Length: 347
Image (cartoon, rainbow, N blue to C red):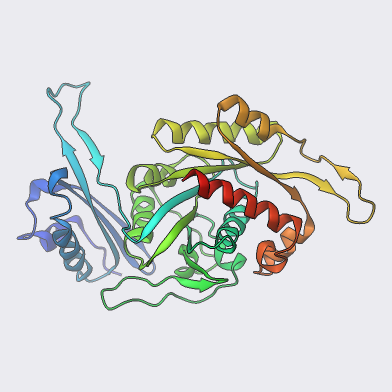
């Protein structure tokens, strides 16, 4: 397969944008073609007026042979008063705004394996059960699990203007990178491609009218989290942790990262809080208990609630029918709806 070059990209943009506007070009080649990401430095006051130019730039690059996907991002450029080796020009991304989506809330965790995606799915359904119009974006591009949890397969349809249409299940509009790649395909992407993929899942999707869009982030504090914080108008983030100390250490790192980039932390959820034997009723605190509540108190953020560890939550998630949908009258579903109510009241 022919490799797409930066010169070809620049050639496609010639006559449309001045060469000094091109802040960077990233090209990632794969079996399906090249994914191209371009940043254009613009006056932030003119960003809205230049949106047609951005769209036209994407169309021109998409016509290059071998290009499978394109993302052109407008970046606001502010020159520093004085340029020295220690002081460089500041680049502040123009944040993506979804006019028909009232609120965007991210669900994050400091480490993997704490049930973040399970929480995202059940929280989205609980918000819907509380009477809201809800979208769910699986931004965990390295391990998208929402399609399986929501029992969705296939590729999304596109509109006449090439925007993807979210799939729907249980009254929730759902979009995931998992719809676009094979389930067992590894995602070996560097920073610019992560940025490009996540911004496209917002900007190039026809989300329609939503009261709230729940975004399931990858675990940790890497490129995906920074992209969300810097490129999307977030109303806040929810941190998911288990009670054990090692999970809380990582949760604290995640919380502090979002605070540093001025994203409100809406609270902490303690998942796998305890296990209650269905046969004998004995309660076992396998990972400890109450650690997330204490951490929330120490850090000065709301404690949103605790969700027990139970095999039925795992079974319903694997079956593609989350517990809030499969057993809406269960204690689990009631807990998620109470957490959803607290979140909606905050935002």
